[in-house]
Length: 247
Image 1 (cartoon, one colour):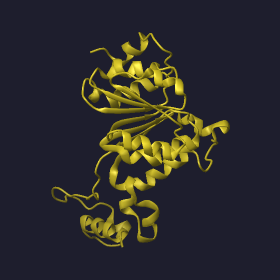
Image 2 (spheres, rainbow, N blue to C red):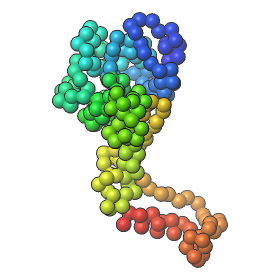
Image 3 (cartoon, rainbow, N blue to C red):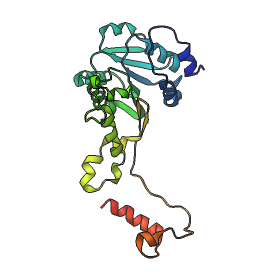
Image 4 (cartoon, helix red, strand yellow):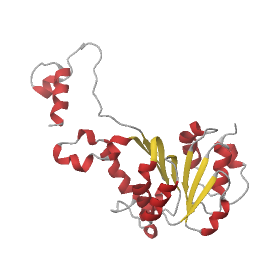
């Protein structure tokens, strides 16, 4: 099986445009899907080069769905490639796509890269990605570009939108007054959010409330004089602290 680097470096065909640091990130997450039957949705087709690239990489068993605003992209449809024409910042259009395709194993947002497009796409299509599936959004550097609606630490960028999801990952530990802000679908359906240069990856999976486990016997006293003022079981104190955080 050809490596992704070999496929990329020897690619010829319709125009393909990728930042070089993306290639290894793709392979790290997508390699287990090669030569398997699964559903792949790419947003943003442009000249059609990426569709050819993914077919070479994944093999003949992949079922590819794609979205682009340009009606000319309909020409890239094949037996295992279905194209939808419409704007990714239109929630009604995305809802219609969601109703027309099976649950998604991998979603790659490589569309128009504006803040409204990226956030609308996430809000509508994230739930249609399977449990144990992957949601990947790339070209996050546009979150810093004014002409895309971005700006450093500006409210409403996709970077800032996704940063809030880090809090949601830790929603299990929220106190009651913060529960509504921190605990949501991200808390229970995402087990990891990974950032790379211009890429964020959401790894979906059923997440149960974390348990703090202890194995083996205590052998030393660890700094509990400074913390608690008297010699006590460190295990018991940790358990007390944990239970107190949730009250």
